[in-house]
Length: 272
Image 1 (tube, rainbow, N blue to C red):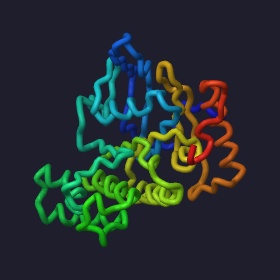
Image 2 (spheres, rainbow, N blue to C red):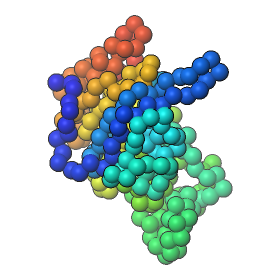
Image 3 (tube, one colour):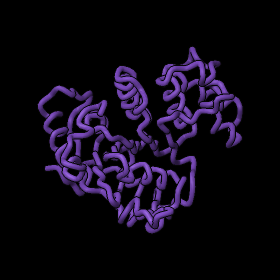
Image 4 (spheres, rainbow, N blue to C red):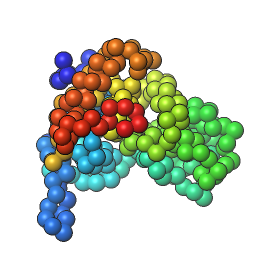
């Protein structure tokens, strides 16, 4: 069954989105980006927000991050209202958003240093997370000296070093080639297992969502809203060629494309 109301985990709730709406003022009148979004996320869950371009999934993520304010509704973490950005929520963007004048080491250590953590502890944290993402040998390189995949590893390590509870990822692998994307997907799952972080990952790819998530939240547009949710009860590592994987992919794709023009099968594969 595609729709679900509860998650199989008994973990405590870490994030709640309640009655969230967002309206932008445009030159030709107001644009309703989100309407009445309700979402509960449990600690340690890996959630994928899935939908076509323009469905509001990135807007929802930015509001959760505290970068934008909702027009109506609330976002809370551990019961405390989100009023702006905070170290409990770390964001990873598609375009990396690294500081070009800082080395890999200094980019990763920026958050703890900014919070006035002792230099010796910053060094320990930086070394730990550089090793976790396989970049110890590149500690003194600058962003312009790194490949796209390396830059995204730095961005992920920077969030981890800042001791976030929730990792927010806005199509982080969308600009990467297929091989690098596949490798980073595997590495992300291993990092998630190791750190026990809560992950909310935006994608337009059904295959990526089914590969990564515990639960897929399908969004539709005009205005953006949650259309349905799907538990992904498959063991990891997941086999994209298995009958079970493809049955889930077909089911979610059918739901996703039911509200995309003409039922055109977008996002059915990892590279769509």
